[in-house]
Structures are given as C-alpha cells and as structure tokens.
Length: 482
Image (cartoon, rainbow, N blue to C red; front, top):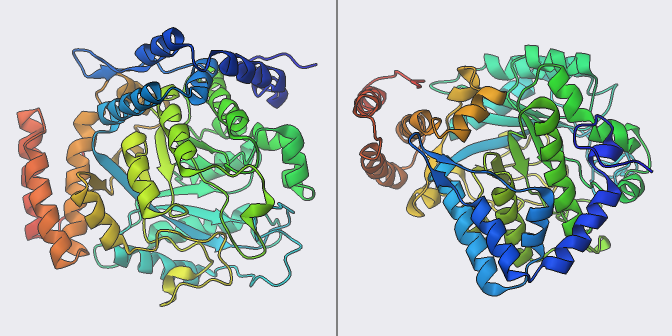
C-alpha cells in the first residue's frame, strides 16, 4: 500500500486514501473538542507585522477538524476569522472575469458533464477564429478584461494548436477601449511540452478541476476517454509547473463524492504544491454539480446544502489563506453574497456557458455546460458589489508585471501586495465606469473610488493613483498600473 508523502510526485502518495480516511477519523473524534478547535482557530488568525499581515495557514488535519466541528459558536468564530483573513490579504476587492467556451466537442465519458461523448442530442460547436473574435468583442463591450477559456478534450477538433491560435486571436482584439489583458486556461491535462507552449503563449493561470479526489469514484465517473487516467489527471499540476506555468488553479466538483473527503484531498493537493514547488495554488474554485442538458444533479447523492457550502469556503480560506478563491455564476446571488464575506476573492459576471453564447441576444441553452443561476448583466453585478461595500477589480497587473508564482506569493505573504492591488483596482474600476457603466452604476462607482482613494496609505502612491484616475476620466489613456 502507498504511504502518504506530500513531497512525492505520485498521485497515490500525495493524495493518499489511507491518510484521508485517518484525517476524517481524527476530525470526527475531535470535532467538538473545544480546546483543540480554539487552538486551531488561533493559529489560523492573521497577525499584524510592520509590513502588513501574515498567516500560518492550517494542515489538512487541522482544517478537517474545523470542517467537522458542530459547535455553533465555534462555527461562527470560523466565519469571523475567515473574513479577517480575506480582508487582510485581499481587502474588499473582488476580481471580475468571464468564461469563454471555445468548443464542446469531447471524447470523454464524464457522467456529470453534458459534453460527454455519448450525448447525441446536444448541439456540438467549435468556434472559428472569426467567431472567437466576435465573442471577444462582445465581452469587451461589456467591460471584461480577464477571460478563462474552456474547451472539451478532443485531439481532432480541439488540438493544442487550435487552443494556441485562439489565445493569439483573443489577445489581438482591441475594440474601442477594450482589451483582454489576461487569458486563463481550463483545458484537459496534457504534457510538459504542451504546458511549455501554453506558457509561451502568455497564459495567466492554468486551471484544472480534479472533479473528485476519491480514486474509485473518479474511475467510475470517468468510464471512458483519456480523462479516465486518474494518476495522469491528478499529477497534471506538477507537469504544468515543470513546463514553466507558475500560477495554477485547483478545484473539485462538490456533490460527486463526500464533501469531507474532497475537502481533505483539496488541502493535501495545496500542501503538495507547496512542498514540491515552493508555491501553492494561485486559485481554488468551489463549483457544485448543477443541472444541464442530459445531467440531473439528483443522480449524485452527495449534494451539499448552502450552509455546508459556506462552511467549506470558510475552511478553505482558513487553511490556504493566500490563495485566490473563485465562485462562478453556477451559484445564486444570495449564495455568492454570503460567500464573498467568507473568503471568495474572484467572481464571474454575465457568464454564458455555451459555445458562441456572447454574440447571441438571448441566452442559448442548447449547448450550455451547466445552468447559470446568477443571470444578471455585468453592470448589475458591478453595481451590486459596490452597494455591498466591495471594489469590483478588473486588474491584471501582477500577471503582466511578472508578479506570478512564488513572486506573487511572497508579496502576498508579507502584506506588500496591497500596495499594488488597491490602487490598481480603483484605476481599472474607473476604466469600467467611464467606458461601459450605466449612469447609476457610474454615479455609485465614482463616489466609491473617491472614498477608497483616501484609504491608500502611502501619500505618493495615492497621488499617482488620483492623477491616473483623473486622466482616465478626461482622456482615452488606459492601462495604468503599479
């Protein structure tokens, strides 16, 4: 039997079933151990330093104890600490992005995804480069600057050369004052050489959801196709980092397997990346199984209620304090509002999960990957965020200034990243307000920017940001960044 080793490059050793089961047993035994829970929460809390705040994070066993804890006052304390951590490292900024679906051709047999090979009645489509261009223009006209491209796994219809050509097309489109400044990529596990080619194409984060860390369930849920290979899929992030991609994004699809098992595996994966590469995941996503063509979530018996979902989000933030956390339009406005307080730092807005969906006036449903719960426009989402006390940020500066991987994490861990993030968020929000916002959103936004400018601690930075914001309002000058 494989032994647990977070520094191993073998999936069965760094995501070790025996260790996960032992962790869950330990968590169950200690879930109402008040002294231990208090000790773990105290360890998780951010501590002030001369530069900013620092956090220790939690081990997978410590985090599992918190997730299992049933004491109401301790759970409430978890939420308070999670919000403290979120504010200490990400402030009240929420990064905005949108998914862009390139193709839904796929050779895999994933039981939870409508793109599976045996689904013969879904409309199959692959964007031409001109269609990619039109989709990008539609997204730019909304105000988006950051995309996450998605495609099924199909070596004939969606080879890597096609993905690379699409990335080149996306970056080449400059429409009015619009430009996509960061392209994140969510495509199937591949080789070190292919990851190197993606890096050379200028991608931001490479995202790959594990779906489930339970190997037997994984094999049953992926009965056919190359994705059936659990080890190859689970070890993909190591190959991506070997290929030079220093920002990677993890995630599981909650609802496929028992959530406590998935949570432990997710935190262990983050620990593995730290142990081997010296830098943890740039982002962690928390999708839940949702209805879609040919897919009924009720066929999976591990669905989780909103209250449990919130607890998972808070515990991830406590365990991996520096990671960006993403919640998509799979979730409703109500769920997303609560999640923002518990650790989420990135959200999608006005998403369409169908191939070619952004150029259609009405939301297409015949090729959606999943049902979108939050169907508000980007303007409505931006206004909602601001009215809730958040700063919608369209910033991509760190990626383009080379602050990625261990460089980003070191700045984040010592609190220095705030000196860049806050003014960058205000400048990119101003761009959005001037170029795309409705009158009411613009009014609320300009008032928010004026107030938030006062909170920039360094006088020189504050003065430069204020001047740049004035220039954005009074000219076509764009893309200022610290």
